[in-house]
Image (cartoon, rainbow over all chains, first blue to last red; front, side, top):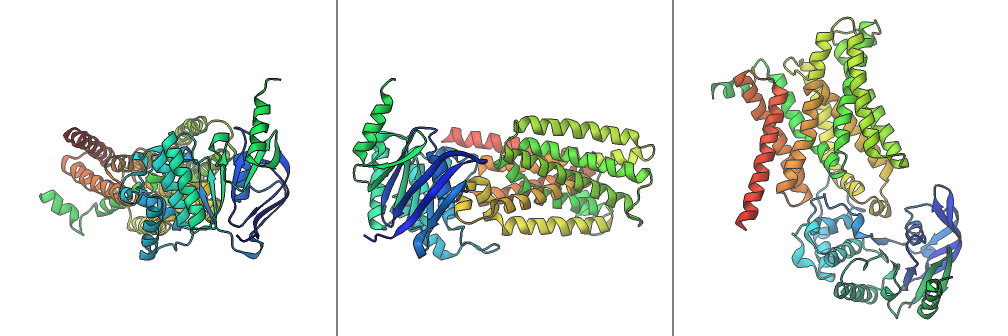
Length: 233
Length: 288
């Protein structure tokens, strides 16, 4: 495995409208790592995640990307934030992943259509490509959003709560899929979750947001910290 | 049949009104799809009303002697300028407040609608002359459309239509998933500004041509009807414009044939299409 850093946060402070939520954030993601960003609801995970994705600017500090390599993100949002009023087919949702390179006034090139078929095949959803996205189950939608992220040809895949709100069997399958993509495509992966039992035991690193502080640790350490929080004071 | 042939004859006396209606029928639903998809339907009621207030205000200025344009069409040009300026100020103010999340969206739009409605009436009543002409323009009586106005409309609506088609992917992406658009390097604010600009111009011109009620109908009913029967965003856009054009054509024919006001007839046709599509959808579901 390459040991180069693909994302480095140095003394970063994050928050909204100038109000600091978490400060002194220092960590790095190495190329090919599988990292979990863990913390309870409202702890600032999504803010940190969106800051890494350049959606929200950091209030302080610097985030370095790539160390000379090109960093291309594949972003998997929380599916409940996507409005079902849009009459998108599965194919059209995945095609969005190619819009970064799409030229205005030009029809979708055939190569892009072939590519999105490959992405759909990789997540096992090719048969559903003509279905409406809004008609799918939670687990199926999640797979389609992963396919959309893959369509951007990323080297870093960031997933926001990918297995929240879906049944246990679908959760297991999604984790297997992410793990398979990690190995097969050599992707650096960062997954956000607020539940300890969603964290696979084999992850390389866990970034835990604990009382508005970022702590790096192993799964055992994170579990013990979470248990301490559960003890009534 | 005779009347139908008369309407499509290039020397037809009211041809400009007929062509203007068709242009509105094709282009307005393309803008309206963003009202429906972004859940801004209430804005579709408020903005034409604001545009209306702009027209009434421009007429008031014109009557009290503020002539910016000395040529023959000065009244219409001033009315259009007032309509565009008012609509753009309103849409950008509402967009900024939306982005800053100040208060509730419905409250802001409701307030805008009431204020604009009251302002329109006051501007018209303060106007000592030409009340009839102002009211006729506000009602969207589209019978007398000069060639110059039709050509300007074709140029502006044509440009907007080309923009909407050419930048369709960007408009859809920033509307559907802003965060994804940012990660793909899209300048979301610029695309939003362009879309709001398009909305403002389409509504201003449309209100001058067919009136606020009719423009609201053409913005919203075709996309709502199309959404019930299509699968996919591309068919959604195409079917919306087909419904708008068909309603405009049939509406004009019926209004000419039975001597009815064109705008309300268009809306009645749009509503009939909507109901038929809804019933058709239910029937198909029952058969399955």
